[in-house]
Each structure stands twice: as C-alpha cells, then as structure tokens.
Image (tube, rainbow, N blue to C red; front, side, top):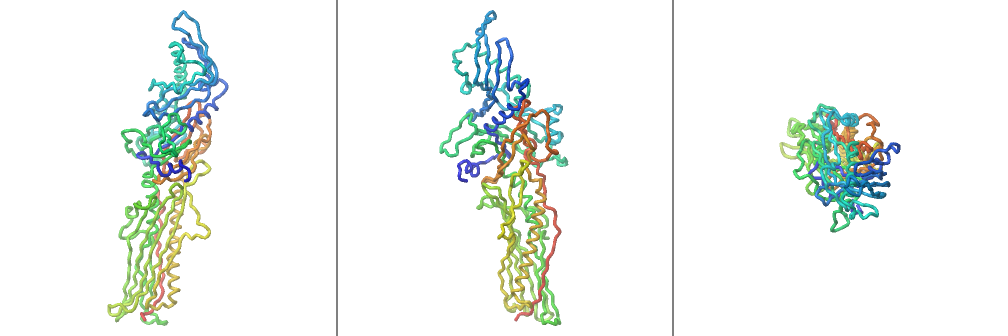
Length: 609
C-alpha cells in the first residue's frame, strides 16, 4: 500500500450505517454519457445530438457534444449536480425586443457554449404496466410480486438555481445582453430539456428493491435492498493535510446508499466522509456486518462443526492368559463432529471476533474427555484416558483478497496402572498436536464477476502437520514406544487431514455460484480487484466496459440470481446504471452433512515394570 489513495481506501473507509454502497465517480458517469452519445444514430439524430426548432422567441439550430454532469459537494446536496448542455456548433436567433411588431433578430454563433441545469436526483416507482417494468423483469428475472422497480431520474423542475460559473458563452459579453435575449436563450434550453425528459433521456437508471420478500420464491435474496437513497460523496486529496472540497471534481462520486432486511435508513440521508472510496472509476462495497456476520461467518462455522475431534470411550481390554505375555490392549477411539454435550446448537460453533487481532475471528471448543478403567480381577487396574481440544481461526488479508482458516486439535492419550487403587509406576503419555490450514481468495473471473477460489499449497507446504510430545513412562509397549507414538500420531493426523479436506471440498461446492457477484456480458460495468479494507468491508472496483444501444433488453445467457449491474446507456436513458438485485442473492447455505466416522487404533501393552 505505497500510494496515498490505497492507504486511505484500506485504512480509513467506512460505509456505516449503510449495508451496501455503490460509488460512481463523475468521471465514470461522463464517460458513459460520451459512449451513449457516440452510439446515437447519425441519421435522423435525436435531440441528444442535434436540436433544431423555431419558437415565438426565435430559432435554434445546434449540434451537441456529449452531455456531462458536475457533482456538487459544497451545496449541501441542493443542487446535487449540474447537467451540462455542451454545444458543439450552430446558432440561435433571438428577437432583440419584446415589441411584437419588431421582427429584428440577433444571431449568435454558439460554438463551444455551455449551460448548466441545476438538478436534483429524484425517484419514482415504475408501474407494472409500463414496458420498462417488463423489460427489467426479463433482464433480471426478479418476481414482480416480491420486488418493485424504482426509476432514478434527473429532476430539473425541482430547482430553479443557476450558476454562471458553469456557463460559457464564447466571446460574447452575455452580461450586457438584454433580458429578452437572455430569457429567449433560457427558453431554448428549457425546451430542449423538456424534449429530453419526454424521450426518457433524463433517466439515470433503475433499481429494484424488496417490498415483501418471500423465501419460497426462487429469486428471493438474502439481503435484498429495502431502501435506496442517493448522495454525492466528495473526493478529498489523500496526500493533503487540509484537503478541500471541490464542486465538479471528476473524482466526486454519486452514491447508491442501500439498506437491507427492512432496516430503516438514517433520518439524515448521507454518508459521513471517512476516506477515499474512489479515485475516479467506480466501487461497490458491502458492509462487513453483512458480508461476514450475516453471511460468510455462519457458513464457515460449518468447519468448526465438522473438524472438532470428539474422544469416544477408549479401547481397554484384558487378556487373562495371553500367549505373548501382554495382558492388556489399549487404544485411541474418537470421531469428528457433533458431541452429545452440546448437540447441533449453532451458538456453540459461532466465531468470536478477536479484540486484539484485527481482521481475525476465533473459535475454541470445550475440552472433551473420556476414559475406561478395567481390573484384572485382583490387585491391578488399567486406566486409559483421552482428552481433546479443538480450535479454529479465521482471518482475512487487510488490503488483499485472501481468507485463511486455521485449525488445531490437541489430543492427550494416557495409559496408567494402579495397584490396589494407588498409582503404580509412571504413566505413559502422548500429546499429539495436529494443525491444518485452508486458504481461499476472492478473484475476478472472465464473465465480469468475482468468486471464491481455493489457493493451493506451495510445493514445500503441508496443509496438515503433526507434532508429538511423548513420555513412555514405566509402561512397556509390545511394538516399542517409538512405533506406538508414530502409529497413533499418523493415524490421528491422517484422519483430521482427510476429514478437513472433505469439509473444505463440501464448502467450496456450496460456495460455487453462490458467492459470485455476477455481471452480465457486454455493455456492463465489470468487477475486478476485490479486496477487504481494514474493517473487513468488501471492496470491488467497477470499470466501465463500453455500451450498447438499449433498444430492447438483451440477455447474453439465462437470467441470473446474482448481482446485475448493467449499464445500458442510450437515447432511452443517458446512463442507465441499472442496479438490479443488489446485493448478491446469496441464499443461506451450509456444507452438506457428513457422516460421523469413528476411528480406533489399539495396541497391546504390558503391566507396569
């Protein structure tokens, strides 16, 4: 993290109190406007490209450059932005006086002129009978009974403010022009805007939001947006000790502020400045409390359930007349998974966030014990006992995309002889520590989404390792203590290794497709470079990937149930940042239940020396 922007993004950004936020920089939006303008037909061009009309106040005949916006950050969101009418060439003719008998007109060459409309963002619900509603259903596959469709548009009528700072009149001294001329020009601009509005060219985009989520619906989302607000987030120079807010900075960002699960949005709409989310371009962020607490942690705690070693009653057998002189057989017995003491209660397996290690959660199981005592019918008793403790640790790479799961099991095995109830000789003891590691990472894929992928171990790295601390004591083992130590530790480690691999594979099978934040094909914003900030918020860069005319909804494949963030800019919407299905429709899933498997290894021992 050598550059100031990345440090600010990773170390400072905070989307609270919102569950998800999408940031689209002014620079990114204006590039989309340029693409939209370039794709309009040159024959019979729409008013977005050419505007020619006669009015009672005069005549206008102009060709237009791509429109642009200036996002405002010093106006307390009123207005939120200026929509810029950029005139490439042409002329206007206005009457010089208000006298109806005076036909004198003055001609202005408007090459390079600019005029800004003070604009607020407004939203309204699209009726189900509207063709746009049907098109959205087709494209995103959402249920009209479950979701509603909101239209985000630029509302000029909401504000009459004008700022000459953003207006340019070429070489003309506009201030000295007559009120009649100024009024005529404003009338031309307003008429142009009205035509743009009627042509749906003032639409920024559409977004679906839940109205009554039904879990029985196949398209029901785990975290459907239930409220969406809009805000302009300022860009501040992360290299400056006293950065200033700048209206019209290409790095200021339009935000979609989203809440889920019918959690009410804050009374005061807006996002407090915390750090630099975008430095141009776009960004999608999911709050850590959604990504981790509500989704991934409950899923990954299945590893805790599947990897805990539970000691069963150990092997303890007495042979009255053995041919080899060894009267006793002892052995370890255990299984993984559910213990009778806590059953399948999920709170037992839940992770706890570390208070002293940022980006880390831990889980520690209760100590489990088992033992069996057997008498030879006379003075000697043979006691075999087992103790096991399992724990896991989950962490993510701050500023990176990796997620690591670590597990550890400490298994104690003891063999002891007693004579008339008193310990006879020193017991034999093995402490076997088995540790495993599982790495996965968020990565971008060719279709423009992101998904989890397992990171293979390095050539010299073992995913599961074992260490043994042992003391033979005064117990004689038939096959030698070193052999016993090796057999017991290898058996336990192999069991844990196979078991955790099985669980990890089941986890990845469950994650396959469920974790993906998917974008449709061409004409979209593509996701890339997923990473976590220090808080654990998911950050995914959005890059514009061209545009195509939105004459009709086009599907590159069957409707998906993941994130759809298509942009279909064109004459029917200047830049349709369609935010459909946000956030990802990640259904509650868990690794498949694994059969409980017991393991046993028994080796004969002799009486104490």
